[in-house]
Amino acid sequence: MFKNTISNIARIRQVAEVLIRYGFEDVVTSTALRRLVPNSRRRSWLEGEQAVFETTRWERIRMVIEELGPTFIKLAQALSNRADLLPQPLIDEFEKLQSNVPPFPVAEARAIIERELGQPLEEVFDEFEEVPLGSASIGQVHGARLLTGEKVVVKVQRPDVQEKVRTDLSLLHELVRLTAGFLRKQGLSNPQDIVDAFERSMTKELDYTSEARSMEQFRKLYEDYDTFYIPKPYRELSTSRMLVIEFVSGCKITDKAQLLAWGLSPEKVAETGMDIYLTQIFEFGAFHADPHPGNVLVRPDGTLVLIDFGMVGRLTKQQKYAFAGVFIGMARQDARSMALNFRRLAITSEIPDMRAFEADLSQLIEDFASLDVKEMSMSDLADSLQDVIYRYKLQVPGAVFLILRALVILEGIGKVLHPRFNTFEFVRPYGARIIAEQYSRENIQNEALYTGTQLLALLQTLPTDVRQIVRKISRGDLRLRVELSGYQQLMAKADELVGRGILAAVTVAIILFAGLSLLGHYSPQMPYYRGLPAITWWALAVAALLLLILLLLGTRRPPRRRKPE
Image (cartoon, rainbow, N blue to C red; front, side):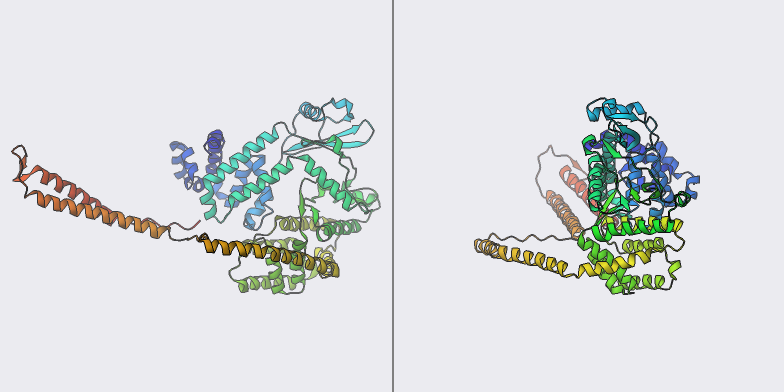
């Protein structure tokens, strides 16, 4: 910890200065960060309001993130999909964040590619475009042509990006350690877990072989689909720092004019896209998590192409059934069914008042049931569901928020292409299909087999476990560990009273000693003052000092009770 703090001290001080600049001096003054800010800068906190205070707190948080750089922006973008952790106004601000990073020199890109391949660029590529097709915080993309003639795109990581990300992740851990108490008081109960999860995500994103595996998985799932295509990754030419992918031409899915010029029906394209995406969620349980228009292309023959598989979401079978059950319960206007499926979906769900939870879901159903089909919006529904999840602190899988976000994006695309596009009309048949799958003979048999296997395993180990417990009881080795909570203040008060009692006893003993000292017979060398021996005066002085201490302890105000974190 100390080593990390020293190595990051300059960057942490910079973070503290940025927080202050945007009006978050309470974050600094309430945490250990205040020690890193000089006194001259602290005094300026008390000077009049700055222009930055004209913005909302949520806007200022976004400004801080933007100034701190790409790693922090990526963390905020990841948190924008977690409505169970953050309030909606902050999520709205995080969704505005863009990692606009200029490209790095092509000479460095070529050097990295040659180092990864272990051979000169010309021995692999017949052509290599100098100007990148796109640039992001992790890497950039160049067009190229293999010696065999195939057109490809090459994703290459930025120089030293892995070291920079590791440094920023170390900094994030240190910042959370310094501000954990403050963050918990603001309602963020597990800041360290969030950073740990983000670290795993970033580590995976820095390994391009993970994206190549995802592309191969989707190619296998959709190998029989004529209307959907995933580019081929060249695994033999790819490493953890560079990725070679088949080049696919096409227009953005929102380019309605080009679709019409090719003789394609925009309405049909929108319906095909929605059908493919819902198939990913409700049939395969694996889905492309970032279907914005730039990542969805359309070929002249109407085939849809998904690119950039850096973000992929997954649902287990049980999560898939529970997620579908939420929508089915809403369609049936059954708040209790929605509540039960929410609890099935949640990783942990300690809802103190299920009646209030069902009442809120019932109100949500009524709000949407009164709307005409044309008035329904996936964006409004997603916001409402996320608000319920946040208020009741339901810890649901992160994939759920990725799905809601993706459905909102797809609805936006659909409305550009299809004047009568309605997301709910597409979801409804999949809900019915999920119910049929959930209660199919095959699934019931599988569930029964799984339950039977678990029960059999329990019965097999139960005699051994019982025998061990009985043996420990007979030998007197059985130990119970009990954890008590809420007794810290009582123990502190008891310690204080015991300390005062000891001090009072010592004071009384010294006063008694002073009285008894008057009866003693001393040598002629013993000095006397006002007729009393010096030893008596010393004893009385010590007793007076102890009495003063006792009086001060008795009049001291009790410390303010800290709120539980």
